[in-house]
Image (cartoon, rainbow, N blue to C red; front, side, top):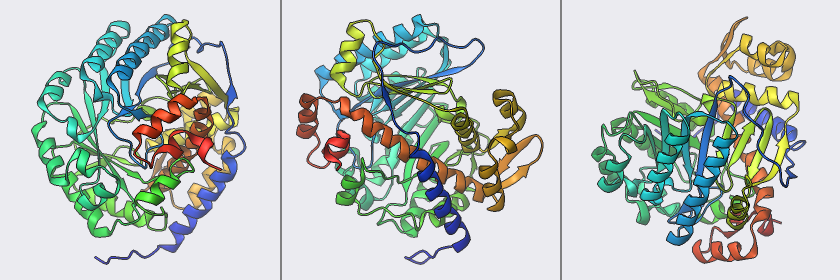
Length: 453
C-alpha cells in the first residue's frame, strides 16, 4: 500500500462538478431572517417528529467542530440543563409527541445527574421509546455507563481516530486517551447498549492509507456494532483552527479513502447511510435526520426543521435563558425553504439513507421525481450513481453513496454558514468566556463573523 494516493479521474471530476454546483446553488438562499416573539408551529396530525436536545458544554474544544459549544463550568451547565427542561415542557405544551430523542453537543454526558433528570422528564412528557446520546471516550467509566444502561438505547462515542499522532494533532490525546486506551474502554462497555456507535473521521491532511486501514481494522475488532466515518469538513468557521492544528484540508484523496472504507468494512458491516455502517444483522441506525425529515431542536444553537422552515434557537446562552425565563421558545432566526428547495432537501436526506420512494415523493410534492429534479436525476444517472431507478424506487451504487456523501458534506458546510450568521447573537461577555476557555485556537469559529473577515 503506497503512501501517496492516486486520483481516479472520472469520479474526482464528477465530485468537483457536483461540489461547485452545490456551492453556487446554496449561496442563493442561505440567509437567515431575525424573528422575535414567534413560536414554533403546532404539529401536523399524523406526522412523526424527532426531538434533538443540544448540550453545548465540553471539557475542551476540538478544532474541527463548528457546533455551538462552550467550555464546561459546573454552575453554568446546571443552569443550562434547567433551562433546557423548561423548553421541553413548552414544546410538549404545543402538542408535540416524540418517540425518538437524540442528545448531541458538545458533550451530553458532561453532567450525568442533569442528563438523567432530562431523560426522565422527556420520558414523562413524551412517549419516548429510543434515546440516542453522544459521549467521549473518557466518559466510558462505570459510574456513567451503569447509570445510562436502560435509559439510553444508542450510545455514540466520539473516537475520531485510533491513531495517536492524529489524536495529538486534534488535541484529544491527553484528554481522551490513546487509541489502545480507547479500545480497552470500549471493551468494558460491551453489551451495555443495543447500539454502540463509533464516530471516526477520515481525510485528515496527514492521514495515510496505512493510518486509515488501521482505524478500519480496529473498528472491526472493537465491540461496536455500528461505525460512522465522517469526511473531515471545513468551512470559514473552522478553517483557521484546522490550518493551525492539522493543516490545510483538501478533498483530492477523499474518494480513495471512502472507497477504502467501504471495501474494508464490507465483510463485517452493511451500509445504513452514506457514512454509517452497521454490523451485519444489526438494524439500528444512529442518525436522527434519516429517521424523519421533520424534527424539533431544543437547546441553545439547536435547529428545528418543520414543514419546510428552519428555526434557529439563540446561540447566546444569556438570550436563550432570558427567553425561557419570559415563557418564550428561544427562537432567534428562521429560514423558509421554497417548494423546490424542500424537494431537494427531501431528495438529499432520502438518498443519504440510501434509497428514495418515488410514490412517497409524488404524494408529498404532487409531482414525479424526474420532473421535480431533472438536473439532479440526470447528473447522478450519468455518473453511475443508481443501482435501481425504476418507477418505484431509487437505490444507490457504491459510487452513488460517495456522491451522496459529497452532497451531505456540502450541506453541512453550508449549515456552518447559517451558524456563522446565528453566532452574531453571542454577546461580548460570552466571547470573553470563550476566549478564556478555548486555549487560543477556538475563538475564531466559536464566535463566527466577528473574527472571519
